[in-house]
Image (cartoon, rainbow, N blue to C red; front, side):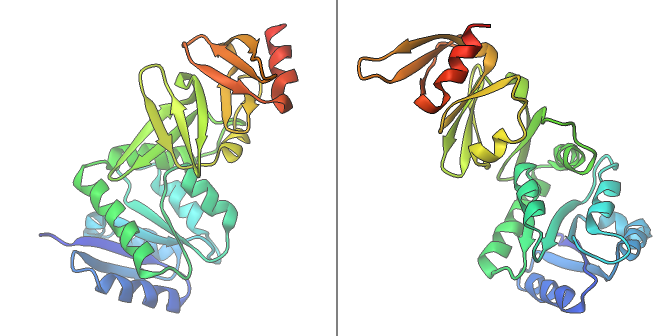
Length: 255
């Protein structure tokens, strides 16, 4: 089997060494080249044998040019190499990567986390998902609109772009959100509260600590015998409405 060729980009030598040793434990992987800067990585990818590099382990914080800047550039390619971001402390970047289905390694990472990352990359390459990955990378790396219009949903070896306008309502499921579409349900790794921060409040309304509904989906509101409320949705579903969000739902129905 042909080895998966990887490029390591980290301005700190210990970081490069750690990744090199970690990859050496996986026979299906090969370190093609190590670079200490984004400029050196750009040159390596442009070299004749650079076209065979399938995965880039990319540090975020580097002097002169950040890893994010290089990612934005690579995002313009039709089939960019898979990018696995590496970070020591940038929590905001980690959250963004999770939401946009881009993998990351948080320093220091353990063997199990590293193996999971390699498996995701291997599965994506095996299923020829690099075109879909490229679209997801562009969605993150390029300037974003004020509110999100789509989500890049990741599963093993696959990335799917879900348009938020197709989501009728969404329900919390631990650290995931279950997106309810007209004919199916999609599980996305993000908390409901974090997702709400990026939704247009004119289009989506929080009705419960565990549910957000597209405003146009709310058809009516009914009180239960125990004093609780439920909203009937145009798709046929019913959703509990908590007292905290009751006034907002009533105001919506009075428009």
